[in-house]
Image (cartoon, rainbow, N blue to C red; front, side, top):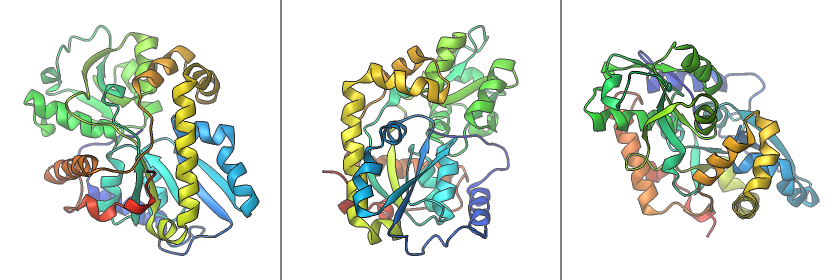
Length: 325
């Protein structure tokens, strides 16, 4: 789940965008007390929360308490993160890199729970007939990626493994839909992307995998909340996470039905969705020390490249008591 960028973009730019969003007249202050009669949840075009929204289980669970659910879709995790910082969301789900950018930009976020790693669900792709045969061949080339996304971190790690300096590649920060058009038209030489866009591009064009995330990046999903909401509404957060856990099991046990449900909603071929769903892992649970350490490695890597403005301690943003046991 992610977006795009390069060149002069830094974590400071992300902070500026997020802070600018905070100044919108209709947005409450990020640290303000959340309304007790509504929960605002951000989701992306694919994933467990999209199924939860479609089934309506959380809406029904909260309705007797007089609480409504306001669902908002985002093209990538970094945009969702900006909405959390701006106080326009209470809860959401993102990949592994957006929380690092958010925390570095001062977003008042906390980690609530995690999905298991799915390293096979993201990859650096090249067109089927591309002369590029390895990640090392990306030197001097143009690569599309969603800014601050899990695929962004994958690209950093893949280049590092291949001995290619990050500065030796032109990284084009482009959202998934636009990145696909750029990739297929030849405006970029490669694309670092996650499922279901990854599976869809493979099926549609025969795109080749230069490197997936196995051995390089975990690619889990993280459920986040604003600190004010998580600490002020613990029972509501617990209900949310329990419903996520239930829908997780449903996705695992009804993969074909879920692909049938999502395909028309997100405009991706059912067979590609089946591939993506089978590559992914479900099972919501708490953040263990291993995932926290993994997030810290991502933060350190971004800070080393000056992609975030300051060092952070990921553990400071972990709200352990909210996680599903």
